Image 1 (cartoon, rainbow, N blue to C red):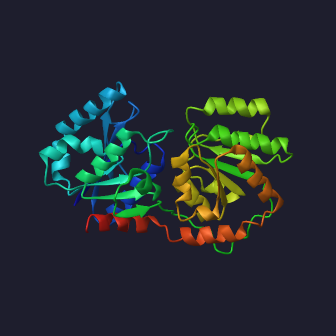
Image 2: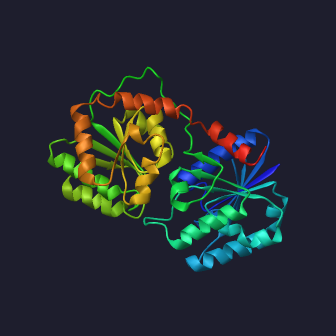
Image 3: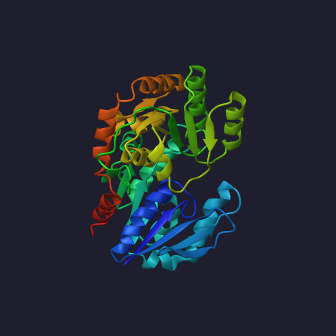
Length: 347
């Protein structure tokens, strides 16, 4: 049986959607399924077709403007109709519009969606609402990553997930005795809030708390972030994209992040998490989650800094929250997520 995943980015690109598709696809392969990923050739140096760890990856050349891109994608899919025709399952990850012309060609073929997030650094537009609703209508079933998407886009989906974890620290691990090392996990862009997290570090320094921050990630604000650190002489180290963050989480005392997967991974390592949101939908992304009460979620750098200082003074004040988050995340496995996909497909 062949499953075709359509997603904008995949290996070797690093990100939450890429990780999600990889972990689910890996487990589908173990069940004897052939997994094909159709994605964008974001780097011309990448092969247009590659087999990686059992995945057959097709990369669509998308050089040109954003407006031209969709036509390039549609043309490529037209020239590879056999992939769509032979697939038992076609599942779109935030790119259902790729399949729109083929809904006419294959009116009886069922497709499925996973909605992973919202568009960019601003609130959803009327076009975004329309595309989510249209994607829901033409699909036989959908999954959302985070219940806030149901609230914001008014979509009716069959399943909600927050992703999964692969590693769990032992139950007997001792709690943090002193807050000295913080880890930031995420892209270095406005949406993830790297500059505002660095403002937190500056407030901590000015308040007499010279804790160290390890920054795991890269992006458009990398140079600006490094200049800010040099200008304010902050105790911050930049490591770029780190595929496996376990080593850093193991020695961290707490974590700064803005996304679900890094939050769940932090819980799995028994770390307390601080999040900064930049708009109402990003706020609800966390506040409508089942784990928001076990972390600190703020919209202002000064308020988050105040929460960090409180934890520095009372390092055991969040032990109960850490334990509850760890117990919850123990149930969030990639095997559970994969079973959700199989149930959606009625298999």
